[in-house]
Amino acid sequence: MELSGKVIQKLQEVSGNSKSGNNWRKQEFIIETPGNYPKKVCVALWGDKIDQFPISVGEEVKLSIDVESREYNGRWYTDIKAYRVDKASDSNSTPTFENGPLDVDTFHADEEDQLPF
Image: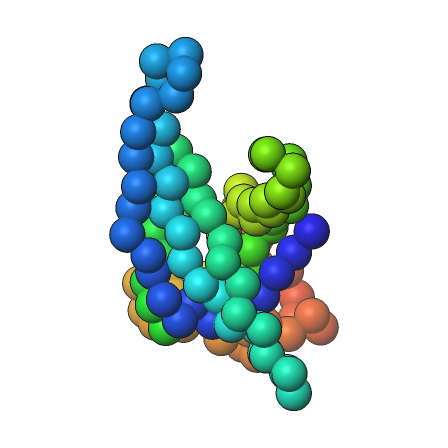
């Protein structure tokens, strides 16, 4: 599943040890979805994903997420975990090369091929 929106809050990173003795880390942040009726959604990054996808407040992001619910003592708890983060600025940027942005209008298909082979 995918979720898009603006990062409006970044919560404190939490870490600990599991019953099996493994270390774990979790970073949660709040995303506000666009539209007439915006929703606020708490999404978590776990472990190495925290370092792999650094997120800052104010960024527009598109998240690939997993939603999972589990029961504990008769109550149900739902987690939304992001496994991929694409920043809006990454997908909308113009490729830049040594001499500035690539100008696609300079190529004309009807010009004769100048390659020697």
